[in-house]
Image (tube, rainbow, N blue to C red; front, side):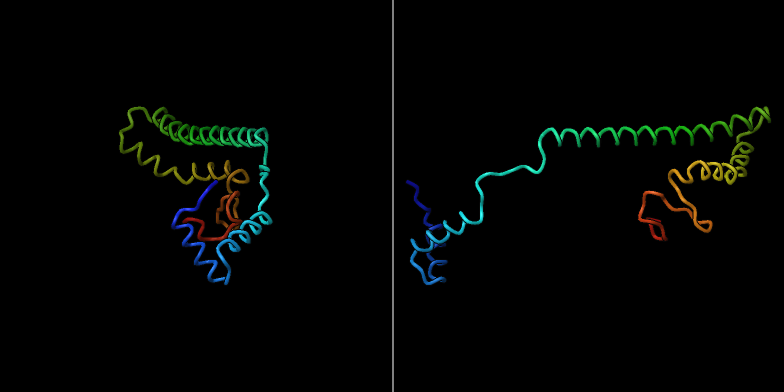
Length: 144
């Protein structure tokens, strides 16, 4: 047999008084109400197998995304290194300041190549403005 604690009994008594019931009537009513609202059996939304499949799909997608980011970073760094290397090959003995100035002067050309490469894959252009393709559907204020 189980007995309520003093605090439980006092709380139940106050609630029973609010409903103008005895404590035993209140307990009986609450038990019946509880039985009507709750089913003892619980069905999970997904099986463990389904959850594993979802986890594996998400992991595969994450791996693909990480590979894509690594490829893009390598392309970016490779283009910058190639620009420095090409300038030095065409201008043997070039000084640091000359190399920096060449990189600064040719940034728009390289940015245009990057934008062309990214357009339709990661960016879309509208009236000379660029937006992420997987974002909120365009417009200004997307984190800028």
